[in-house]
Amino acid sequence: MTDTVTVASAAYPLDWFDDFAGYEAKIADWVARAAGEGAQLLVFPEYGAMELASLGGTAVASDLEGALAEAARHRPAVDALHVRLAAEHGVHILGASGPVFQGNRPVNRATLYGPGGVIGHQDKQIMTRFEREEWDVVPGDQGLTLFDTALGRIGVVICYDSEFPLLSRALTEAGAEILLAPSCTETRAGFHRVRVGSMARALESQCAAVHAPLVGLAPWCAGCEENTGRASVYGPPDAGWPETGIMAEGAFDEPGWVFAKVSRAQIAQTRADGVVLTMRDWAEQADRLAVPVQHAAES
Image (cartoon, rainbow, N blue to C red; front, side, top):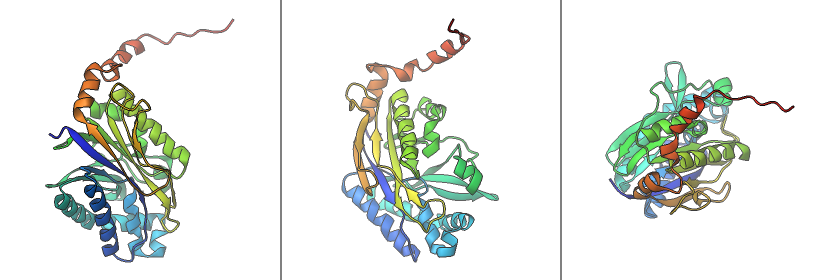
């Protein structure tokens, strides 16, 4: 496996396309630019695939159910495109997530592509209120996946999933060294929820976390009309890491790539002999929780 991995996090805007060729050209340009900067692992955001709803026309793209179905319809062509680009540039790509129908309702799926083809996919595990109550997007039924790649062991926690520590903990206990957190958030508060969650996951599991947000306005796209965030890469604030835990970040709502170098050897060193050992000491919580909570009342 490679020791030092150059990761690229996308702050990615949705665009309108009149044909699939326009989408193909956009993705090819984004991948070429990142690969040209030496990126080995490219991370696109949550629901970036929703721009494909534009291919159905204005009425379809502006309808919640219609947009989901239209975006899902192009999944085979999206997979073929990303497989070709990953092979052409010799990179790994976490494609922008989007709907994939399983039965009557869609899951929110992100697929990991490598130079040799599709490595696998991760479906979002916990739905936000909007996904549950308006889109009726459902959790994936396969659970979590650890991707064992030439770049290291990778886990994916899509947006809201990054805010639940036991999901990332299961991945890191299985061996994950890099967590990928693609997101789609309407407000800065929403973005910061994912940011704080992802930074906390990097802290407690002593690993790197790559946060790739959707950005910009797309008033024609149902459910993704407003998007905000900044591409970022986080690590544990420990010896040999940035003291803020922020390895790299872009400007708010500015489309483009942000790059960082992640050392797997440094992750292993921090987990073994860091200033703190949160990865190791996690298990002590169970002992503390076995003692009943004491109640103290002010007299």
